Image 1 (cartoon, protein in one colour):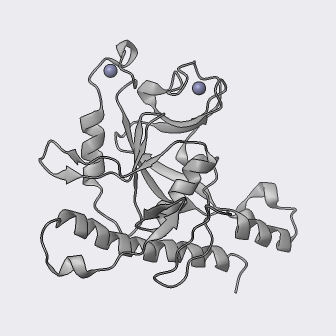
Image 2 (image 1 turned 90 degrees about the vertical axis):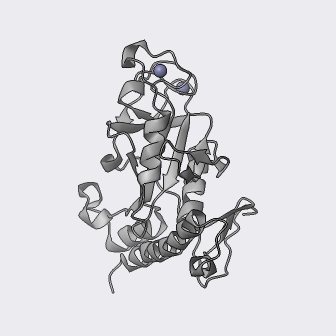
Length: 245
Ligand SMILES: [Zn+2]
Ligand SMILES: [Zn+2]
């Protein structure tokens, strides 16, 4: 037993949960048909009166709340240029972005990439006058990077129990990739204090208040923004409704 077992167990739960999500992806792609895929049961998680298909999605919703990013869950189905229908997980209407949650058990992410290309505008970066510079973003949200105080210099002098306590309570850090192969950052606007994702063509002004950024921009690997860790779930049918907490 090590102190980080609790974290590992939690991430394992998320990963297992992602397997259930894969079943959901199959469900979506076979909509209207009734093959044996539709009999696979997904694990619903209720958070703020919304039923999510997985704990990982619910944790992402809680994370967006903690950052005060307004979200809508599955509000719109797109028909992609390839003719395929695609229902992204989250719309983030105030920052002009969509978020697709992807776990390690979900290899198919092509639709998110196709939507990213579809929503990009074709303006010259500095001449773009679209409402969302460069077009709306499509971000892929991953399971969090664990908080690891045992391997971080700034916690070197912390006693063992304090490190263990920190790791147990910490949600880890937000990990994401952009679907457009640009550099992408998260930042908290120094003007309106709202958090948003920005990509290379958009890195000059806040998508919420449109003022110029003075705040630092963070890449995914810099582990700056904390992921929100919802309470434990165990058993298939348990629901974590923390809205009343
Ligand atoms: Zn444009
Ligand atoms: Zn702003």
